[in-house]
Length: 562
Image (cartoon, rainbow, N blue to C red; front, side, top):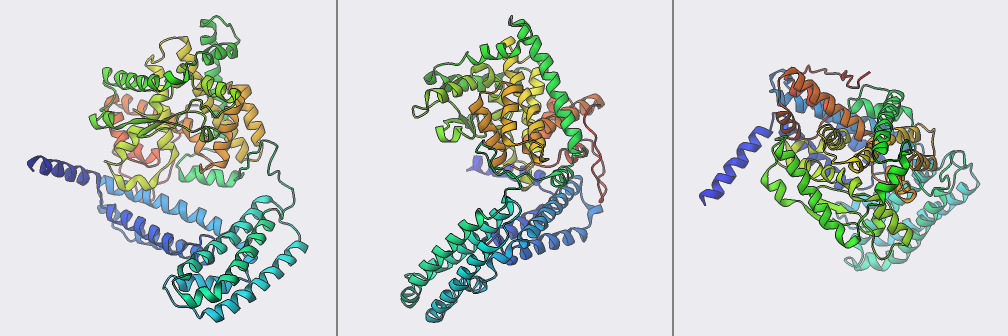
């Protein structure tokens, strides 16, 4: 009993250290947002956009009235993170609302359906006979709308057509959810509504399918790669950069990506010469790819690499690694289907190992084995586990957990990529093959800056991005296709891929700054960084330097070396 009490006291003390004056407000906002999302379940409706937009404005107004000057350093930091988050969410929410307004007329016949699903929330019993007549009238209007649409001018791009289709589908799903609420529980409703709803559902599906393809081919949807992404454009990119406190233009970051790639290429040539391939570094890369091991032996080797990385850190006293963090990571294998999108490891508490399965073709098996050879993987196992993503998630659950809402890829991937820099500096590669493995990934991160920005600026197609990864980094083609598909078809934001190296350069510059000032040892830097949870790294820099953040703080940290 005493032991349990002691654990509870320690946990309470840790919580008190990790809380700030903004903790209740941030937790209340999170509760408000999730509650509203549960209630207003049609995310493509005026009702939803207006209500969530008002939520952001209400909380921004509440922040204005808070006694900022009286707050502790952590309270001021939380205020800045929260304010930046709300401004970002409000901006992009408003932008999405404007896009929705541009196509919302596709459901201008559906007001009775909206009234029906809104009434269902309060379980108001409908007049089933009248509702059946209403559905019949709405469906007639829907069919008339569909015929008019067939004669109208197509949308000028496929993204708009797809959004229009999604608006119809969102209306259909909300109507279906309300229908299922009453169906079979209300005998009168079931008797009157079964056929009208079935007919309405088919008509809405047909209408949505038509709209999806109702566009002029002014912008290529599929360049032959089969990868369908959405180019966001220069304005959205630079807004995203501003909210992530990256005071650089897209063009400046492109130049940095090319500069970093050039460094990698120079180092790759050195490793190639060491292996006896002269300036033909791709031949050296081929040699390293062919060091793959039999499938049955691979998982055990991955666990050995993970333990090796932990030992490397602890022998050099580079950071504090809790025993529980070392105890709780585990492994699983990635399915063949998932490897089409994620051909390499994924990680966190579980490292998900990519390697061939029996259902793959022979060519795909070889690409998976070659792309996950021991020298490539030694550079990424620690990225996924300790000190990487597993360590991040472990600490984020225990320190300032209210900040988990402020997830930013510059912090998430920047920290893990920084460790690839740091381990290189500390001679982690044992030989030239290991150097090639680490440099392959570092080239890849630099290439991500180049191909993702060129794509989102509308300069490159997905196929050009694939070719770039094959030609400039030496990817297996199937793996390059999977990487590009993951970048543009997944749930990643437009800055995610460039955030690896740019975030890593932020952490690297900050470490050098803090060590040069004499304020921190390297271990203190790592322990402090990993215990602060998600935020723009410039704000973490201010906290480390114990700066008094002004209420109207503006980003200005130029962290890239000229």
